[in-house]
Every structure is written in structure tokens, then in C-alpha cells.
Image (cartoon, rainbow, N blue to C red; front, side, top):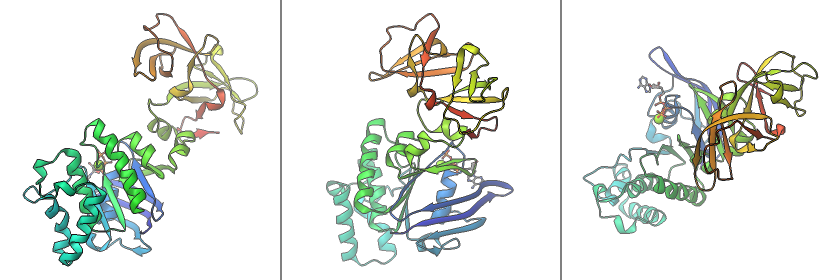
Amino acid sequence: MANVVLEDVKKSFGTVDIIKGVDLDIASREFVVMVGPSGCGKSTLLRMIAGLEDTSSGTIRIGGEDVTEAEPAERGIAMVFQSYALYPHMTVAENMAFGLRVTGVPKAEIDRRLADAAQILQLGSYLDRRPAQLSGGQRQRVAIGRAIVRDPKVFLFDEPLSNLDAELRVHMRLELARLHQRLGATMIYVTHDQVEAMTLADKIVVLRAGQVMQVGRPLDVFDDPENLFVAGFIGSPKMNVLPAVVAAGDGRTVLIEGDEDMAVALPHLRGTLQPGREVRVGLRPQHLRLAGGGLLKIRPDVIEQLGDVGYLHGRTPGGAALVAQLTERLAAVPKKELRLAFDPGRAFLFDSNEQRLR
Ligand SMILES: Nc1ncnc2c1ncn2[C@@H]1O[C@H](COP(=O)(O)OP(=O)(O)OP(=O)(O)O)[C@@H](O)[C@H]1O
Ligand SMILES: [Mg+2]
């Protein structure tokens, strides 16, 4: 297995800069998940690592070797796409063996690797079928099988589960986690899906407009986001963000929406803040609870009940959207203003440039 290092990697299409200087250190055997909004450059970056897209500047190293200019076949990687990209006229076995046959791997060796991959992915009874005779999940397993038989140093996945229905996604997510444990391979995985990112990753990379916003272990990114973008992107429902102003006095109290009733004391702040300064307070829906004495005011409008939890949606008196995750089941949307309580130690603070204030 191999590590992957990106050093100030950039990519432009014509005059448009798409990847704007990415540094990344991926350890051997690590499972790294890249997330970010549509169009931020996830697929482009993955394709650059694969060698399917050339790199405008910077260096890509795989296993210590500079592969920036190397052909895809020389990089020791295998890529799995969202679209599976199987050959419709070939059987499962032929699809999986094709890449090995064209590179001249001996038949006995192909058979051995095929049998291994089929066993790992439980494809043994489908080897003679054609892709059209398989379910979406089975097709995706064939696409993964085709990557496994090549025995790559690094696996690259571009949203491999996004064409599957919800139940199959959950199933395949577990399969991928097991596959990673079993192969111990370096894996770089692109997804839109929060849960895939949180559950599969040893390390999450949050991208925005071609730049890395934060890299870290999933729970560290969730618990300790460096900026408002990451705070809003990781976690579901999204973190509530409310305007606030620093109160006169000790520089560690903020008034949500300037409202003296919604004063939040933040003794855990390391520094003090200039009274009158405008900031934003971030509150995770999971950290809010209904409580008569709570300081946060909500005017509810919709309840979503999911069975185990419910989401109470509404607005603050100032009109900011607010959602609280509740464990109690409310029978109907309350007509009156309610109060939400939270532990101030769990409130996040951001400056007007969206950077975290600690
Ligand atoms: N060959 C190309 N020529 C010009 N622009 C391109 C090319 N390929 C990608 N882009 C642009 O680069 C940006 C990043 O695209 P990319 O496909 O990497 O995004 P992504 O993060 O994978 O998005 P999604 O989540 O929708 O798959 C987009 O603005 C896209 O339009
Ligand atoms: Mg993409």
C-alpha cells in the first residue's frame, strides 16, 4: 500500500482556476473522504490523482514517487465511478478480467485474482451474467471487483453509491467499510453524503471552491469546525447561525439579535471581545432542547417527526431560521413562542469573516 501526497496542486481549465493550491497528506492504508458542494472540484482533484486530468502546477506523489506527469496506468491506482462504466456485452467475469487481460497478466493469475475478488464481494454466482441482468448494487460490486483484481496501491472512488437506493446505499456503505478493513488499502473517496463521510472516513477533507477548508477526523471536524463553512457543511440538520452583538461588560457575553433576553455568557472563550462587535453564534440542532427557562426564543412553524427524533422548525423574533432536534414527540405545532435551552459551552462563535472565535 502507499501514501499519497499533494503539494500545492493547482488546476485551471483555460483561464478558470478550479483547484487553487491543495496540500494533502494521506497516509498508507488511510480512508480519506473528500466532501464539498457541487462544483467545488472533488472529481477534478480525484481525476488529477488518477492521472485522467493533467495537473497545472504542484506535485502529486504516490508511495513516495513523483507521479505528476505519469500515465494513469503507471500510478498503481484503480478508480470506481458513480456510473459503474461496465461493458454491457461482457459478462461479470470478463468485465473484471478485462483490464488484466489487456496488460498481459497470465491466465492462471487472472483466474486466481478473479476468484478472490468474487469471494470478497460475494459475486461468485453472478460471474456469467451480463450487467443488464444485475441489480444496481451488484453492478457497483462488479465495478469495485474490477478495481480489486488490479491489486492497486490506492483506490479512488467518485460517489460510487449515489445511484443506489437508500437501503442499498446503507448496505454497500458497510460493505465498503469491511472491504477497507480486509484489504487495508489506501482509499480516497468522494461523496455528497454526510453519513458516508462521517462513518467511512479516517479523515475528512472539506473542500470549497477548489480549496481545502479543513482536514481532520470526522468527530473532530464536527466538534471543532474551523470556520462557518465547515460548521454548516458537516452535521445534519445544518447548524443554526444567529446574528449577535458583544454586550457591554466583560467581553465574554453576546446578545443574540441584540436582545438582552437572549444574552449568552461564554466563559470558555480564551480571549475577550470588543463590546459592540458583530459576531455570529452557531448552535447545533442536537444541542437545543425545549425548556421553559431557556433563553432562545422560537416561533415554531413546522414539525418533522422521524420516529426516534423530531425536528422543530421555526424562526427567532428577528426572523432567523431555527431548527431544534427534539426527543419528545409534539402532537401539533405549538401556536405560541417557545423557549429553547442549550449549554453555552457548546455554542460556537464566528466573526464577520466566518472564522471561528475561540
Ligand atoms: N473539462 C472541463 N472543462 C472546463 N471546466 C471543467 C471541466 N471539468 C470540470 N470543470 C469545472 O470544474 C469545476 C469543478 O468540477 P468537478 O466536477 O470537479 O466538481 P465536483 O466537486 O466533483 O462536483 P459534483 O459534486 O457536482 O460532482 C466545475 O465548475 C466544473 O464546471
Ligand atoms: Mg463530481
